[in-house]
Image (cartoon, rainbow, N blue to C red; front, side, top):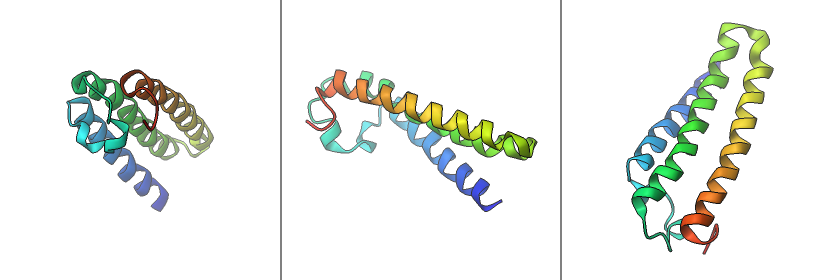
Length: 103
């Protein structure tokens, strides 16, 4: 039960941050990640989507075992697939808009 509350909390936080970044609040991303970014609006849209999707995946991971306990492994698999996919997407967004991850 405690883990479910933590997953929902972190998931909702990522949902909110993802929406804020998506809508142009790129200041939520550390400044060295956006040092060479020129188009902050496009960067925010491209970077906010993966953050939002990771939040959705966390909320889904917390919800599935509440429906059926056997779905815990399925929810966990969904989360890790979404996390890996979105981290790769974030890498390519960084490379496109900033030149590299940390330049």
